[in-house]
Each structure stands twice: as C-alpha cells, then as structure tokens.
Image (cartoon, rainbow, N blue to C red; front, side):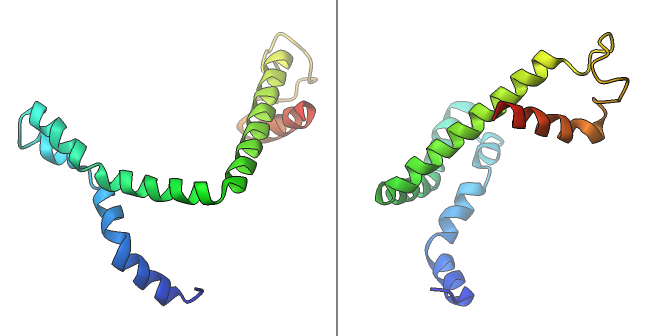
Length: 125
C-alpha cells in the first residue's frame, strides 16, 4: 500500500487511539486527584496500550528474525568502535595544556570536536 490517504485512514482506525493513550501522562493527572497508592495502581492500568504496542513490535521481530540479528550485529560493531574512539581520545589526552602534542592548536575548541572524534574513530576501526 503506497497511498498516503489509505495509510492514514488505516492508522487512524486501528492504532491511533492506542498511541494517543500511550503518550498521555496519566501518572501526573491521577496523582493530583487521588492518594499515592491508588494513583500507582491506576497508572499501571493506563500503561496497557504501551504494552499492546510492544507486543506488536515483538511479533514483527519474530517474523523477521534476520533483520533483528543483523541490527544487533551493527549496533555491537558501532558501539565497540565508539568505545575504541573514546579510549584513543583518553590515551592521547589532546586537551591537556601541559603536553605540546598538537603544536599549540586549539584541538578542544567546539568547532574541532567532530574532527578529533572522527580521527579517533578512524584509528579505532
């Protein structure tokens, strides 16, 4: 289905109400009106729409396990590369003014942070 009107109509007739109820801050609304013990109990019931949404996502994941596995591997690779880059920056310590590693260049300026991270990420890869 590629027609935006059909997609919107289907969403409005199925999951819109669940998403709307899931985004309302019921905890704050309830706690202002009833005691704390009752408000906690009522707040749990209003989280049911969120659980329904999660169950739908889990059903999709079960049907497309290969996509889930591939995304886990990618997330792991990028996380390890990020940690490696952070370790390189920590070891090089370019912001220490006592070291003259970078010939007086203002490496830690806000405009240079991206270049410093990109270089460390490249080294860690």
